[in-house]
Length: 358
Image 1 (tube, rainbow, N blue to C red):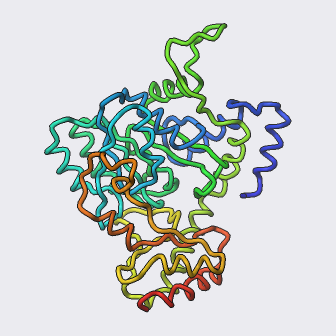
Image 2 (image 1 turned 45 degrees about the vertical axis):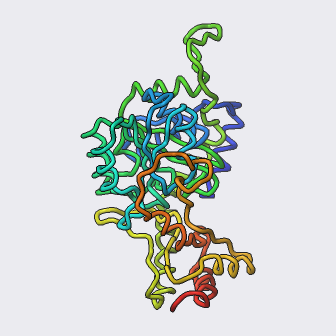
């Protein structure tokens, strides 16, 4: 915690506004707008809820095609299914580990049915080549939704991730760089879209004295209590990013003799938040390292298993070249908590060196 969250929560209880509205909901939305320079923001119950509302507002429905990063968490994809649409998975490139603009353009040129939207993930807090991707979406008439759930504070050419697309999405789940325990934020430059998303997020109630519903909606708004935590967390976001980047640099230093390691890259003119420190090594057995760390109560994980390899998407269309699959089989997410000291990083590295070609 940053220090002021408990005080802000106390103010919420004193106000008796613990429902999904209130001053802190408004304040949290304003803090996101100030930080990201997004024009409009809507505080919600999760990042997945935000993606779902974006798709609904954009008119994505039954049978529509929606392109998506295959190298991502399933929360990015589930909302496509909620709308009855078809996910089509696009592979990554080695330059960013994020969605490949080259593969995207190749698919858009060749496809017979124009996709309605693209959901692009900024993986592990590092920027996708979002400028190239946005230009392609504009050229081919495809709505762009940025899944910036992991990348709040990441910068592409002096501009925040989440602000290049028609919609941007942030997550405040318990493991993100800042947290409200659970929650998300939808941002856009289109006021009418955000107002429509707000309408859907509060059960689509019409402006009448009684409860009138011409459309169905959802219970997706964030509570005032969680928003109070978010306001406090935003005050220490830059410090969190600095610490995450420091942890990554410590890992690089302590494993500098391991020549076969490839760290997750950072594109030119970008600055990621390094939410998680990640690397690949083709000659190692990642599960041996995971088991060795687990024996001393240190958690590590493989990289995301690509969506096109998941059993539930075995019949989904994909446009892949093997990049994300190779990353999954050779990559590792290292402990990256902002509570870590250099001595903690050094301990992790010493255990790993027994299994790495150093």
